[in-house]
Length: 596
Ligand code: GDP
Ligand code: MG
Image 1 (cartoon, rainbow, N blue to C red):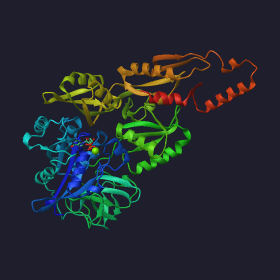
Image 2 (image 1 turned 120 degrees about the vertical axis):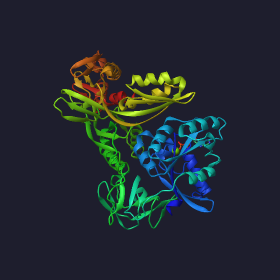
Image 3 (image 1 turned 90 degrees about the vertical axis):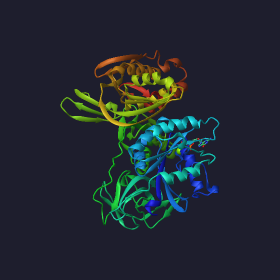
Image 4 (image 1 turned 30 degrees about the vertical axis):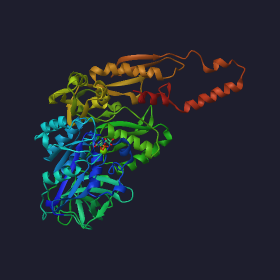
């Protein structure tokens, strides 16, 4: 297709505002999916996505659309809808010239709408504001059209009103996309440069790589180069998705499609990388490429220690289709053999954990998630800490922690509440704007560690569910952080070490010792549970000694009963962990880690 007839766009929306449903209607109206083949949320292919109603992996679909006497090709690029995948979102946006900004007409603008809008504006995309769900009785299209127009500039009358459910207004939206979104421009004669905006592992075909061609063209069977690694591959297949793969003779300027090279690992086909021809390579890559960087770490352990090899195999398999997944073996005194796993964020963690449990049938326990700390010692040595129990004990000059730029949207009555919460979480306010009389946008810089710890739940419960949150990484900053250790009779229980702000160390110590006291069974002797910062004990509880031996109850006589008891004890011992001389059932640690 000639570039003048191509339109590349994405839909940006807050979760549940109807992106997938609208995409379904577009697929139907353009004739790409036949009515009888239609099922809800056609593009959300993974089971977990469908069940959770979120889109993890972006995909691109080509749809024909006639306007006047011209046949156009619309490429709809689906963007992942969650903060953890900001980088992937930004690459998907970079593959487009325009964005449909979709807002639920009964809800109005939400934080995720704004965060994605800012990303789209940074990429200079043409924005088409659209209100969705106008069929809902609770819809207030006039009110929110005003809000949207204020935000993106322009006339409220210009805001399109559609219903993804009934299909109302969707044809007009497709026309508007052709009219307003600029056609792609590129140099057809230059060496090929195509940007990878997604790469997905497929069991049968190996890695399927989604690209947007900027300059030149790619043809089947030629050799291509991944510019970040200089690795070359043969192009086995190239084509477009509509909505199933259709092999083509190549992809030219402005086109969006997929390619297959036979590689088996998404790490060989990285999002953000530039693809060029091996025969006539481009000298400069497209820019904007960066390695996925794990932001949140957690220890993952099999509940049953003998599942360790199965867990390792499962992680090796998942890694093939998740370039952001990082892990290395780790042992814990309390939990045995497992892995320290790095994730993009909390949702990524939940998804991986759920896939491990569901697709690989593993029973897992994870330690409390933590961020990555950069520690500089007095002698200038720098240490990256991904596991709190490895926080250095020596003289520390500085500790740096990752921070995020958070956007929170809330009804104006909750401004004080939101500010209070962010203040408690060491946030720094960067600004505040009224979107309308009753809705406020607040911007904060917050330590990621504070968000990882139940921030979202707190925000929701304190604003009766009305506030929404989005955030993106914003580098790091120095903070007064200390490691709190938990000791059982003087021995450290590694899984419970935490890095916290100095002012919160005491609270953490009191909370954790109290919790463990509830869970740890009585021993033959008294067991002190302590929380300590370095050598200084900041909190203490005691598990009292058992009063009597279990056997004392059965006086001499009943031998068989005595034997039964001893056997029972022996069996229990297998599941015991020794922390020094203290025996603790593994279940107790699991309970302590999973309750809060
Ligand atoms: P996404 O999270 O943005 O992809 O949103 P979905 O497309 O999954 O839609 C979220 C919910 O809103 C689903 O229950 C849809 O059935 C519903 N929904 C989507 N569009 C409309 C609409 O135009 N009208 C009505 N009444 N409901 C809609
Ligand atoms: Mg969706």
